[in-house]
Image (cartoon, rainbow, N blue to C red; front, side, top):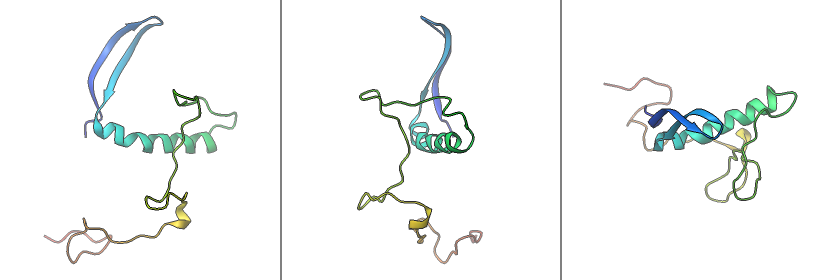
Length: 101
């Protein structure tokens, strides 16, 4: 899986050299997962507070991941979710069972 492209390892800016990369679409799609892990780490592994803050460029509000229903937009937790089989499950398959060949 390619998450980065156009790697430019030796850029120079006003504060000295730095590395720059550009996310692929897969990388952009993974960003909410990384932000959720960051939120978890801030809550459970940073007793002195957040080491880094991610701010909205427009209003400087903090960026956080929010799990919500795609129909009614109500916030959700793990207790609000039920599992249903999806169209990607192979015919006759059972969740957790190896695919039949």
